Length: 464
Figure 1: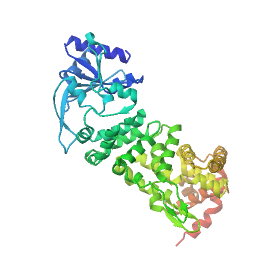
Figure 2: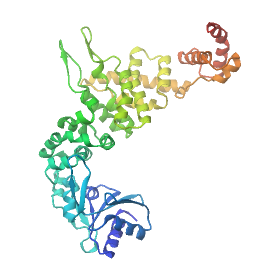
Figure 3: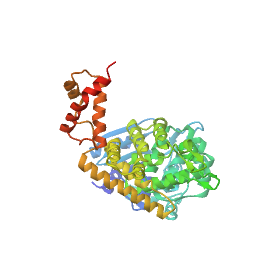
Figure 4: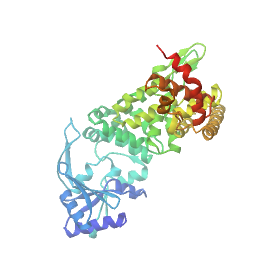
């Protein structure tokens, strides 16, 4: 069964049970926009969970989950996520985003929706099949490409502050404008976001970062003051300072350009997240020097060290933190290699440091080349391409990406007749350094011969 056939069959089940049933929200919006969607929300005038049980039985489906507290049910069926809820009214307490729920009509249910474009429904009963209910002119707002709340936006965002982040996310995903009164309310009610769990805010940030042009969302957050609450570290990147005619670029705008550049070439969330935070330490490291102007020395290393705390605050997994730390720590290295001289030794060390993330590092570094001066961009790209070319040549020749000493610790202990300890580490490190410097090739026999050559001198030097 395709999506429409599933909806029609569920409509038939509703008819059999003499229940009014509707598809609402995102599926209706996406259908009118000509987009496909496999997440379908159904509103039943009656009990959503009880109807879901009937659907499960009639479709011989599995994996029905009922949330009694919220009066909803979720059913996975043929790669579709189906959610069932009874038509309801909601009333919010100002200190919580969890509503008091009571039974209602379809009109009540649509009125509680976040935005007019999500407050549309169509009937799935046979007598009114796909008849659209649109009490707040969501269809007109779709055509005008604007985002607006059905109710007073201040009340809408006060009741459920997560809608502030959803407004920004939808505007970014759909490239819609936020209606002026609604946009003003975003800023007015932004402090209400403090009652929302970090996990929910982070999920909205993740969806914004995964859009075609994430900068739209971050600029909206900046314009409304939301950025100061949800990502204060990024808010601190804003602004340009001038001393004696020396200016530095606006790091916030540069960051958004880099994020968009990455978004054009990669769907990798971790890489986009790295782009967002790659210059997070620039406000901390910014200095002015009379002879050179503005500097940000060490922002790569300090930024990498900041990421553990940031990832904990955002409730992000350790693996993402480790990845981001590595790329931020290394993001200046390819250009530094180009400036210092593209030696095989420098290339080997960069390949070893980057490891399996080397391709992502190169993708990011290319995206990080931004300037209003086309000639400067051209020169940077030429230097960068030269480094990349040499990296491919050295990798092909020396196999450095998964580099470690060809002679392992157990062999060193056997050859030198020593136990595990500092001497083993010292010898292994010297072999690795010799390979990275190009003194010996990255081969077992050469590394073994080098061990025989240096072992006596090293062991003697380590004696107490």
